[in-house]
Image 1 (spheres, rainbow, N blue to C red):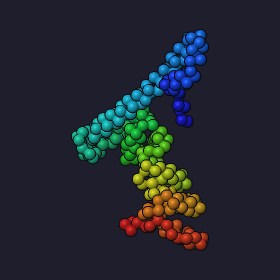
Image 2 (image 1 turned 30 degrees about the vertical axis):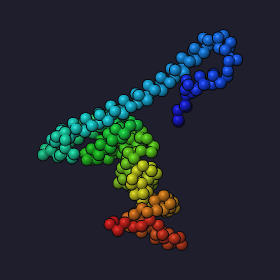
Image 3 (image 1 turned 90 degrees about the vertical axis):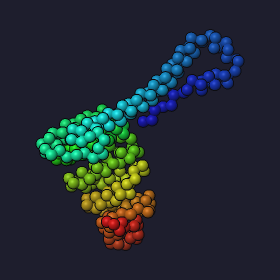
Image 4 (image 1 turned 45 degrees about the horizontal axis):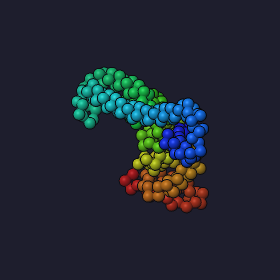
Length: 257
């Protein structure tokens, strides 16, 4: 729910001025009341400004925390703080212990800063570690939680939704996977939105929901007419349309697929 816009102090003073000199006597009689109102207005304005300042500080703190934790993870795996890739320790048991430790730490960070970009990144990191450790259920829970906490229009939320969709596919939960991919494809800030919708089409077909597959494919045609989709997405839809006597036109197949 959007927060109500509180009336600013200068708006109140302008309105009083417009009322003219005829209110002078009333103002003098109700000076204490007006003083109390002015204090309340200024307090609200200060609270709004303080909240915005606190929010910026929280975002900065979250970004610094995840950057530091990421450096600690790379170093614990035997790398240096400047490495862009995580090395693999020679001792498999050591590697597993480090991943278990940092999966927990990234999970805690994602919940501590839920709703921020850093929180979403922490959820992605933790989920990836849980997958490597062989715990897809934990990864799924984290990514779903991270997606719910993220801003509705953020690309990071789309990435989380897409990861959720692929995990649900792996579990054979194709209708749920399709919805997750659709959620990712509905976010305009996501550069891979058309591909996510293509994944949704594929999952709806796997779930034996041809009408849903055609519906989402229609969205791709209208919203992403220049999209290049894999032929394993386009082919089945064209066959389905042909069987129903519908036009087989649509997004171009990706020749590289």
